[in-house]
Each structure stands twice: as structure tokens, then as C-alpha cells.
Length: 335
Image 1 (cartoon, rainbow, N blue to C red):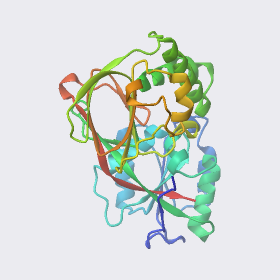
Image 2: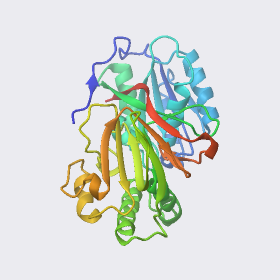
Image 3: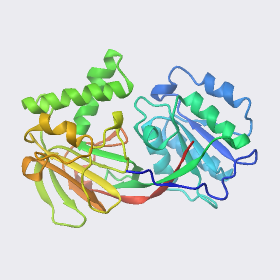
């Protein structure tokens, strides 16, 4: 599927007058060894306003400051959770004038979002390339516009915004990865790949110690809700997930990807390689437990956790159902 690229907005003319803000999370996976390389690079670019954040509250305050400074490019030097915090805070505060373009660095443990809509290369190399473009105009820059997920119904919280929602086995997989994979020193996309392989084997064997069914009542696009036991459910606006997988094969015209597998789907090991590439399989049918659509909205009622961009949430039962809709669009800079 071709990238929905657009030309640069007229106000984004590279040059020394372009206002750039940088938000760094020193606790993200790629930044834990220190930010000195980033700070050293910024010494030669004093026009860039740099803020370090570790909590969503910090992110909100940083964005408020960048809003006052009318930043035109907001660089995010953090992981998927940091991007999620930026999107959530961004959609809850007015921005004067033209909305900024986001430039994402691969500075997380997995950096799934940045690998899809962010800058390629290491965080330092990408930032150096970006700052060179800002000051000299060298390089080919384009803007990608993507829908953003809006998730409502979690506790008494304000709506959450992000690009990847998951429930059931996806949350179980995140916990397995944190407890059993990361603790062995395995990180990044390799950790995600190891976890996926382990979960596929567990599902094929019916191993309920690792993967257990979650009853979920699902209604799509205002339709009636149906309850089933699910292996996993995801809603996303990312074209590619970790390791480049693309587990969507619905053909409708709508902004959100929805994929769900009922518990213990048939022919899983035969079907998974094809479906992970976004291709239909003769076994990958609803009758065998495989569902994929492009949707406008999902309404989910269940007891259990969900994840948004890698952050785990446990909704209050009184707050169900969880609704996932399009919350707007964001612009991402590719260079």
C-alpha cells in the first residue's frame, strides 16, 4: 500500500527561522544509556528548544511550552509510550495557528510507531539529518498524514490517543515479554519476534498457562454486539507493526484496521505466515476464527486490560464499554 505522502505545508520552509522543539524521555529504552550524544549535537543548534520529560504530566507541560513558542516541528525522542503521551496531550490542548508536524526518533525499546511514520536510522543520525535539513534545506522531506485512535471508557480518564490498541492475548504477550524476554537481556524488535513465536506455539498447543481466552462483546460500526472468547484483538492505524508485519486483510474503505482471532483458531501455524503479511488465506476465514476489517469504530465490553502503544491500562468495570474511533489526523515528517 503506498504511503499517503503530501508535500510540505507552505509554512514548513527549512531555514534558521523554522521553530523546532525537542521532547526527550531519558527513561525510554534507547535513551537509558544517556542523552549526552543528543545534548552534544544540540550545542551546534541553539535554536532548538529541548525539554526532558519522564511522565505524561511532564509531556503536557513540555507541549504547553512548545505551544507558547509556536513550534512548527516537534521532535519526539522517546519510545511508543512517549509518542502516545504526546498524542494524548496534543489533542487536549489548543495549538495557536498551524498544527506542528511531528518528527519521531527511534529511541524506544521497540519504536514500532517511529519505524512506521518516523525518521529512519539511529536517534542521533536521524536528528543530525533533520537539523541539517532545518538549517540548509538539504534532503527530501515529505509529510505523512495518518488517522489517530481515540480510546474512551478507561476509568474516569479523559480520552486517550494513540496508534495501536490491543486486548486479550496482546496484553498477555506484553507481560510475557517484560517478565520473560526483557529480563534475559533481549530487547527491540528481536524481543517482539521471540514473544510472537512463543505465543503462536502456545496457542497451537492450547497452552492456557501463557495464553488464556478473554470473553469480549464486540460491536463494529454501530452494529449489534456479539460475545466470543478471543485470543487477541487489535485496532491500529499503523501500516506496519514490529518486524514489518501487517496483519490486516480487510477490504472495506475506512480509517482503522481491525483484526481479531477467536480463541484457539484452526490451522494457526499454517495460516499465520500468510495473514501476518496481510494476505488472505484459504484457512483464514471467520468460520476458522479469523476476522479482519477496516472500520470506523469498535465498541468492546470485557473485563481485563488493554494496551495503547505499549502502555497497559486496566479499565474500571463501571466504565465499560471501551470505544475506539478515529480521533483526528496527525502529520509526521519523513526525511
